[in-house]
Image 1 (cartoon, rainbow over the protein chains, first blue to last red):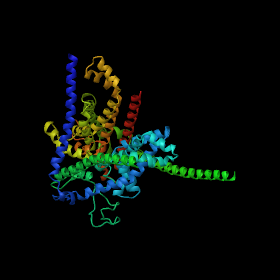
Image 2: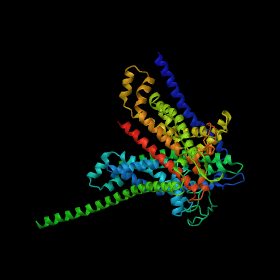
Image 3: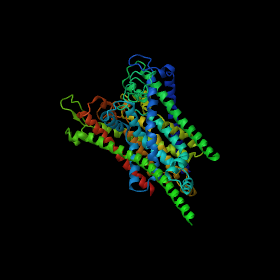
Image 4: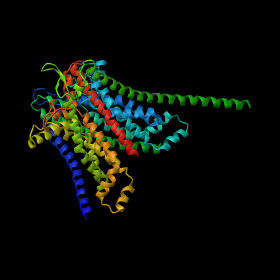
Length: 298
Length: 311
């Protein structure tokens, strides 16, 4: 009888705590969206920020965030895929493989500010890239790489063994099997994982403070020459991303509507991350269906 | 006979031709993937080398004693009262206090959430809580900092004596940030548990709570602790969310609601205002070295726990 009472109390506590977590998330999202969305409109999304006047927007920051993400993915994906494939297909159990595994683990748990400092020292100062999108993309690559390596390795490992064996029996080379048998099967989970990782890159700010910089030059959106300093697609210009902007106006914002801008920008950032998450799931499913169906007919 | 021989030679030749192509392909693939792995190793070696060489310069080049640095509680890098003093104990204390407290808040909540998903309502618990956990993991840290600044800090200011900023605010914000890490690892461990363990406990007449507390939790404890350590590592290294709510005063606070600082927030705030190569800048690098050292400690603890988990 007593044991049953304790059981009931414990169950209630577990349920209450779990519902508390749900309530925290709902409260968080509601707060961010309700508070922020009232400030979000087309001109907020497209206009430039103001330093001391009210009514500034987040246009350049939004563009910088997306552009930086694209640059990062261009650098990260080929490298991450390569290292992931090595870990899944070529690595033999032994000291070296254990060491690489440790490297991936340590790299993914480095504090972002430390990686940012490293970027400041080596990429920004020593290599002389300055505060630029390119420096930011390289630093974000350091972050993203362990994630992509892990995702790729898991995706390749989850391909049924028979597929690989069938390829080997046909006399294909290992690399051919990897690229034309295993890769198409692994691609949906790689895509899902990469998009989810992109969501994290999108919200990263600490590492970018000292690498991509905390300011954006006046951009001329009609200038598409990548070497012109005012061109939005010049990778060697400083760029303040949306996440950095939120941090900056919270800590040193002088505009009278700084709190509203921070709320609006947070809402935009959260909505983008939500879209990333939903898109990752949907696209992964679509890709899986498309690839497996094409297998069946072809 | 001759024709046969010729045919044989032809087969040999085509075979060797194919073999070479096959070999070539594999060589390219193997070297490309090796190159990527080599790059990973190069990155980590250079991070460790550069952070360590910069961080050690404070002690070797500038002659700051390691004892004064780690255990000195006075931080006056520009020497506003005469000579500059570099004591980072307040920051180390702040980092440990916030991350420990965050783990203390988040762990029971995470364990309850994972029990809810696997033991209480396995049918729909995961469908409800897993998306919640994933969304919490996806929210960027600056957004957590912003919400902390606009909700948690005013709440603490109104409820408790003090200004609201400080260790308590930092720990609350961090606890929500590390909740997903602990929960997902604990949930994985709980789902991987052999069914027989639980069933035999039920067969002996144990209630669900008795089963959970006496059988399930002791078995998954190493895995849960792994999650807690990983969560703490994340909390220890988090910079901006903490910096926004902690107040950034470089001294050891007397209460949880008094302004203080952490290693990460000091680096964030000061690095932009120092000249590369100055003693102040080097001291900040030493703090980064301390952060890196703690990362190694956390990874080591996780490894030890994982080994225990396997047995």
